[in-house]
Length: 144
Image (cartoon, rainbow, N blue to C red; front, top):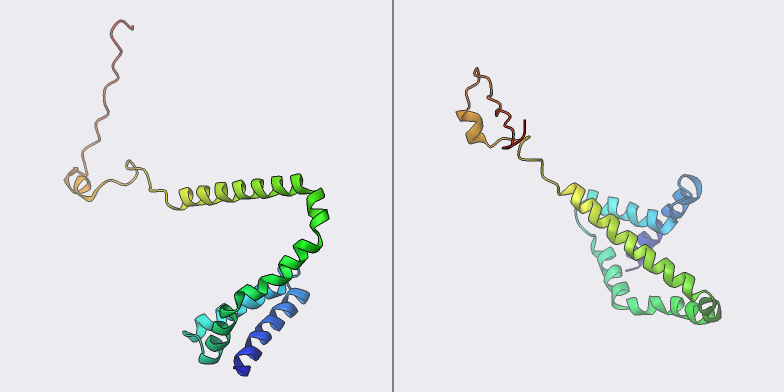
């Protein structure tokens, strides 16, 4: 268990160093998690000692929220004074997140138009040397 904990702390320390000297705009713990992910993907499996530590941390995940809750209670007057601004920021960020997610989903899942890609049956039956006939322009009745 100690070996797994030491490895997790090493990845966090590497992330902090990378954040300090190379990528200061990304938090160190995030970079540490990315490094851990790369390590696990390259290894192909989660080592037993890291799995043991991770399972132990997940069993007590609720305890990790206590410092955040204390911070909210400590700054409650400040939060109350800025309640409208915080509420507006939260609502706008949720709406923006949903809009960007929907736009990306629509963009990435868009199929090409049917006129661009013809089905294989039509391609095989169409003569290759004959010109394609264009429909004649017709005027509506009464128009000249």
